[in-house]
Length: 56
Image 1 (cartoon, rainbow, N blue to C red):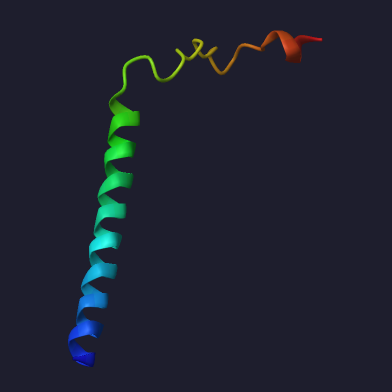
Image 2 (cartoon, rainbow, N blue to C red; image 1 turned 30 degrees about the vertical axis):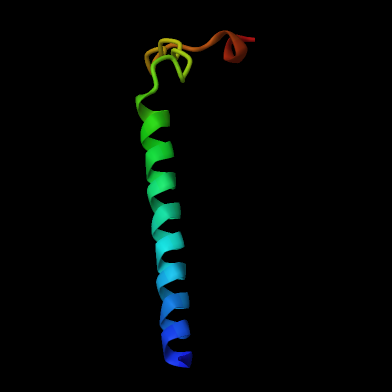
């Protein structure tokens, strides 16, 4: 009976780890594919031009 309960404990731990991994992967996929989740980036200036903060 001890071996059976130990095996059941290992299966439970493996199942919880698998569910946690799947939840994290799903959350990352939802964040990556969510429309409007990130603000639009401002256009980058060419390398030769100076920005307003560097000009003064």
